[in-house]
Image (cartoon, rainbow, N blue to C red; front, side, top):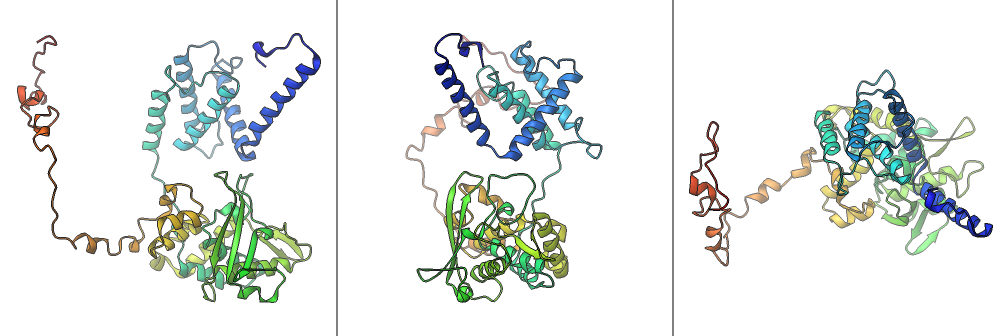
Length: 423
């Protein structure tokens, strides 16, 4: 607590009330981020304190003894130490620019949380030019990112056709079911760390015949007309978003059949209930839960069966993100409106565009033919067609500086002509 908030006098009840409110406010701030984020924050801060120890400033955690510009230089130096993997294991020689940027962001947040000036901001409250250029330099030196390829319907069929074990059945149902809802991997499988997005439970899956809600126990569940899934909490802080998909009448690629088969299978296990996660399966009489890493293995195994010559890329380029991208791609290629793609995939902005894979051959089908359908078009002249000719910013204008002094005065070896501000 800062000196200005030290309550030296007054009734104890008043002081205790304030302390309780301060503690509650701090708890709310902690609750605002996921556990995984707090862990990353703690790791970044431990690296920062280790850096300060190495440079002999271990006692001045917030660089209070330095001028603002010097703090920026020091935190930039820390960023370079992170970049060089000074605090990482021996298998790392250099960390990505995004990792450096995230680490600096966590340390800067600690400054702000402790009511210190953010060392990543300049005197006028703008992001530091030095740090921005530093991170940009790292980004330009990093290899280009290779996003996972979009999954195809043929690959989904191959995954669903593998039914040798109970786990295989579960993987097939999960991948097909997740595809139709453009799900994030943490919504239907186990992932490392705690996420803000909640793993779906059986209670989140509803089936309807017409407008009548069907019970999970009904024998005719597979003949439902539609399935609705409620996403209780998402990474964009949206709550209780319900998305509905309808029966396709396809024996394999049908959201209703996939989710109905999954629900009936999991409901058949001993001890399961409404709160059982959708990624449950039984092996050796024990209830297990499918992890995202296992899904990746299964997806790539099926991609190997189909072959690189058919899919256009090696199996290693497929993963759990392929389902979300494949869903966006499938909707786009089949003329689903943009706003529908965004709503089904629960994208709150045009961020969904990064899931549209431009390298897909069919992406530009018909574009070139449309481009030549109109042979010519008419350019409407400006209402004041002569105005721009008097604009000294216009090339060739008689009032422009270049026209007045010749266009070649800035060529290599030439000097700027004398210029008098008062003439």
